[in-house]
Amino acid sequence: MENKPRPRTEKRDKSAWEERSKVWAQTTVQGKSKDDTLNQIIIAEAGVKPGHQLLDLASGSGNPAISAALRMNGSGTITLTDLTLGMLQNARTRALNLDLKNLHYCTADMNNLPFGDGIFDVITCRFGLMFPDNKVAAATESLRVLKPGGRIAYMVWDAYEKNPPFFIPRRTVSQFFGEKEPPVPARHAMSKPGTLETILKAAGYADVIEKEVSYNNEVTDLETYVSNGLKRSHADKLDKLSEDQVRRLKSSLFQAWSPYTKGGITYVPNCARIGTGSKPS
Image (cartoon, rainbow, N blue to C red; front, side):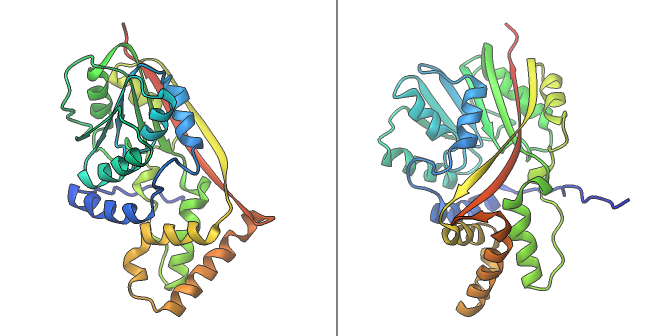
């Protein structure tokens, strides 16, 4: 039986995330999300409503916070947190471009939130819980700042092999450079079914539900999609290539995506897991 690779332990300190935010500033959308599917799923599962006091953890460039603000239509508040100021600046730019005024920004570690007890109606966290060393402690800290009866929704990536947006570019780039494919990243560390449910129950949440969510992102501009992916994840390698080599690398990626392309549209599968729970009244 073939041994499947396990997600590696991958620690990123604050400076590493700050450096990553510079790349995201160059590649992130400057307004509404072009592919809003996962944002809308976590917003719906969390039960976000106009008038809520919403806390979004590990907001990055503003997902799902920007989409939540648009749904709330100026009522309530959305507090965005991230480990780095750089990522939050990306989110702030998007909000300004969309004339959103009910957003607040705060650099914060999800293990030690700078808020009092029982403040927020709802908490969202899209692709952030995979990174703290003590995930139960992080979920417990979120429970502390929730109002009794308040809800939380965590979204994490499902298995590496279920997510071509990750394994296709990593394998293609590795083959291009004649290198061995790197270990499975930490972003997939919570892909085993039941992991989220166990963490939420251990943290003290009630009404816990975990489920898989999947969909196809319809990419009509594969050139931009591939270019942005390379800039975000392989900028160090791109800097060493000539223009011709970059063209050949992109050509390899276009070929790798061809089985998913039909009629000029590339149907990119995405697979995640979502866990929800509520604070006991």
